[in-house]
Each structure stands twice: as C-alpha cells, then as structure tokens.
Image 1: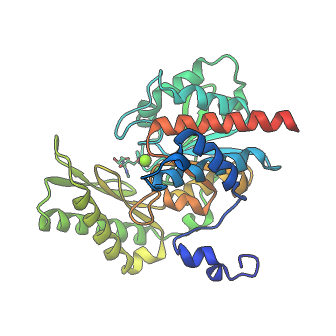
Image 2: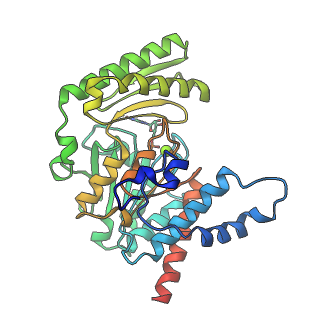
Image 3: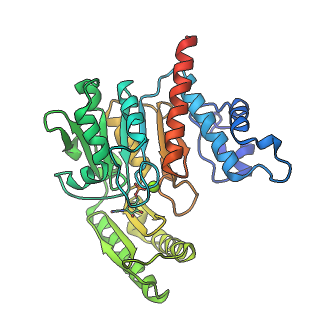
Length: 346
Ligand code: IMP
Ligand code: MG
C-alpha cells in the first residue's frame, strides 16, 4: 500500500491509525524469542503480554534490523532527560551510558543529543553543565581520533541550537545556523514564531489560573514552559489537561499552522517549543551529508501519540522507546552485540 501511495489503506494503519512509516524490516519473531528468554513472557500463566513486553520486543527487533542492514548505521541520536540521565539531572562521569557513547563514536557513528532543553547561549556552557560527564570523557579519551571526537553534537531546543564538539576548544562549539538550518525552518516568518509563542504564553497563564496550579510560566527565545513552584509535583492529570488544552488552542491559530511547534508533557512540566525533534534529527542528517532514515536511530522516552516530543522523531528515522536510562544502556549493549555478531558472519 505504501508503494502504491495509499498507505492509509494498509491493514496495520487501519488497526493502528497513529502508526508511522517503517524504514527497515523488523525481525519480530527473532526479537520475541530474545525477549521471551529475558522476560519469560510465554511461561506466564496469569499475566498477558503487556505494553512493556511489546515495546521491548519492538526495540530489540529494531536493534537487530539496524545491525543486520546492508546500509550501515551512521547516526544515533539521544533524547536527554530520562534517556541519558534521570529527569532534570545531568550526565555524570561515572554514568554507565558514557563508555557506550564513546564506543559508538569509536565505530565512526555520529552521536547527537537531540533535546528539548533550549539554551540560547552561544557559549554552550549550559549544555556542557548537563553533559559534563560525557564531554570530559571525550576530552580525556586517548583512543578516539579528532574526527571521531568531532562526530559528537548537541541539538538543543528541539531543532534550534546546534553545537559540535571541537577538538581545539576541547568543548562544544556553536554552529552557525547557515550551515545546518533546514529550508523549511529558514522560511518561517519571525512574526508567526512570535505570535505562536505569545499565544502559548497566554494559554499557559490562563490554564495556570483556571486550574489553580501551583506553577509559573517561563518564556524563552524559542519556547514557553509551565513549571511547578519549588518543591511541588504536579499530577499527571494536571499536566495532561494543560498539554491537551494548549495543543488544541494552538492548532486553530493561523500563525501556528504556518510553522511547526511541539507541545509536550515533560513529566514534571509542560512546554511549547518552536520546531520539533523530526526537524532536529533531519538537520543532523543533512549536516553530516544526507544520512538516510534507515541509517538513523533516535532513542527517547516520549513516544505516546499526544503530548510527547520524541514521537515526531519517528518521521526522520528509526526509533527505540526506552523507559529509563538503564534501558538505554541495555539497548546500546544489544545493538553492539548484534553488530559484532553480524560482522563475524560477513
Ligand atoms: P528532553 O527530554 O531532553 O527532550 O528535555 C525535556 C525537558 O527539558 C523538559 O521536560 C524540561 O524540563 C526541560 N527544558 C528546559 N528548557 C526547555 C525548553 O526550552 N523547552 C522544553 N523543555 C525544556
Ligand atoms: Mg526525555
């Protein structure tokens, strides 16, 4: 149906309307046997296969497919919060994921952090603060070449600020948008961007008042957030109400329709950002010489179909949906193992 240009008539799409395109085949049977061994799914008598069982089978199938593909994996992008480090925390030097990221770089794979966290500061200091453990490890590594080290990038604010590791600076260097900004984004009218941010700001302020939330609204260069007061945790229902109402309000704005925005529930806060992670991943693909979606993997925690920000990355490449930083480590170990096995059979 895809090939005929009528993907909406496919059986899978009819059963799961929110399904996206597939860039690789998925060896689901093999992946099931692997996960069954780990999770004893078929041995269970009283608990049916769960959402998490299926999520992990799909992740394993995706890792297998990328390792087995004749077109090598070239770009792996990571969400920040919950994927690389705990929500709101930073990447520590002794984090288990750090040597795994260095391992990807050593295989000439480009590593990008594609995060919503938006800091409009050319110094890159705030991103350094959050990724210090990894950046220091890259600086001190004696096995990686200069090129491999400079294959580390950070795309902040969904798709608004690009930084690249620079060997001379031994840190992150701001990359001029002229070098990477996609034409679609370059063509957006600044007035539409500002109108969308204004509307997001007034909508979030209105919801804070009407729902009587102990929270405040922050306006940034390319995003607006509703953040809880110090020491307060907003409930899932409060966050969802805010994200769904804001999304609905923005959808009917002419200005917002002319650009792309992303409204999401960050687990503790709600944000509306200009642009989205598909554009962030696509910008990296273009910047590094037109890497294809089937050579790209994005790993993140936010893949539910509404109010999530990694969800859009599905448009630009293959994806893996993790639930915590430990699962990210597991997926990277699996991927590494499958790539080594595949190499041995070539
Ligand atoms: P991610 O998981 O790396 O995409 O980061 C999402 C989290 O970053 C949000 O839940 C916020 O807590 C935080 N954040 C900080 N600044 C921004 C911003 O400008 N836009 C969106 N999220 C932000
Ligand atoms: Mg996240």
